[in-house]
Image: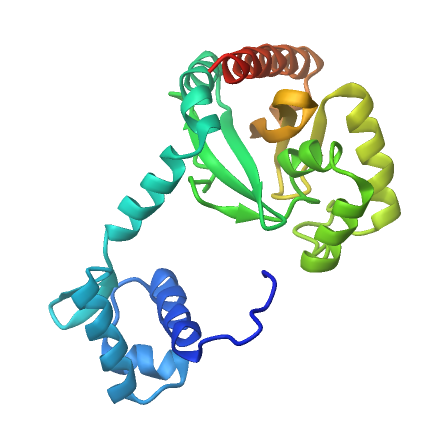
Length: 255
């Protein structure tokens, strides 16, 4: 959710409905899409043909799907973010040095975490995480790492806007409990997510600080809970994570 527009343009809202439905469904016919979004087939066809003209939709064998033009758009936006260019080499190296972990570089946008880059080790399992994914801050290690360095007023604003939905039985859904944990994160510089976002997966995260100690993102290492619960493994990954964050911060400051 984002702040509602004063005078929203209905045609754009309708187009977003079509795009979101196509993202979820994959290739789809006009009739089926019209049924799913509860619009007349004629109106649905008009939107699809317009999106096709603009290059954002492809028609193949009578069905419509989103085109790779969205990839081009997203890639261009991502490459305009300095942190992405600065951190990419280092997070790739961290992923390759890991055994079976997922390394994620995240930023906050509109009160949500956005996975700016995702790197898998060569032996990594499938975590169903990809660049561009949005997720709530309170239920993720990266989110908590960043929230811990925000003013309380900003944290409250984010929670008011997006709520604290439970992703798993372990998700923190009480504000007081969250603020207690954020104080610990601020003191230690490390945020833990223990099966709060996804069952049987844990995450160790650290904030990335820019000039004047303003948080600009977070770096996370995620893996199977049974592996990260091993003391030696957790300590090793935590040290590697902090070392990588330190290099990224130095490179960001000197860019």
